View 1 (cartoon, rainbow, N blue to C red):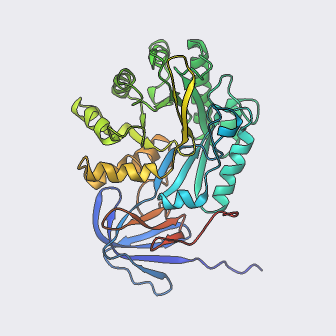
View 2 (view 1 turned 180 degrees about the vertical axis):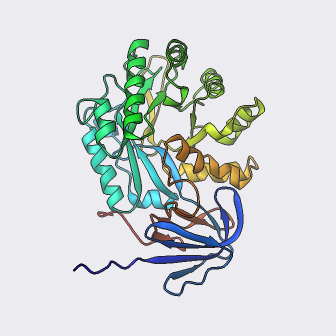
View 3 (view 1 turned 45 degrees about the vertical axis):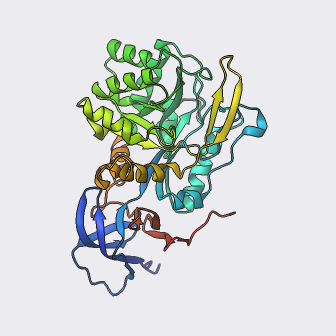
Length: 385
């Protein structure tokens, strides 16, 4: 007869809790990877007690755009960026990641992507993936986007580049077919079934998406355009797409002059619903600049730390209430990706929790109920770190 496995428990005591709305000072009991109980006072002698007095307790951040196997390569083989490290994610307060490919869907593969996702899961985080890359037809594991979504646990949708000089310049018919396939596969598998669109600088912007919505019954929520602050025309199109019921994703750290908060304020001033706006880091992807002839002039690596940095910037510079700022990196992406047990601190939800200090720096990280960092000291590192 098997012995019953002991359930490890943690109690966070006297924390200022944001769920992400402010819920006052509470204790939180964690067991079996979930939030078991939240109350003003809990007495559980069997649990490890963490004194959270003076700390701000928030949901773990959800980053829905990370090149977990590395990105880049536009400046030849030596410019391929490295894989993400577990420690970087933990230090950035990220407990849930969405892995995807970029320009390079050739030397990088969906097989490699899913393997890395499984590795990060084994090391303690929650990870899902997008099949495909910039190109069309989409690179897949099974040979079919629909089957990837249906039968591979980690895959929740597909990636595609649109209006970019590195894209495959899909036709309207190809875009409609891909979105239709992804929509149905998502419904059959109980997953989000999304088409994440890397948006480039081409003047056509989201025009093909608007045409697809006009000509079909595909819901706007299937398309998830990202990098939408790349230029003013694209951002105006993104606001129109938001008005039509779609989701838009802003890339943290993409502009030094404007924060994501500046763009969100514009959306709110137009009377648009900010609950369908999300932020992501584009972590481990390459950022690149090109001259008027299309020649590469600069290239670098984006950091997963940008997501937390943007959260802090929105509070300190844009004067957002912390609860609202948190929604764009916790509850909103959880809803967008249909991650039902993520993004909120409630009984029965996954115990993905971050403790911030009074300056909003990441102090302690709990992922799936396991302490990954405490008092700014990493307790868990990647296998080969």
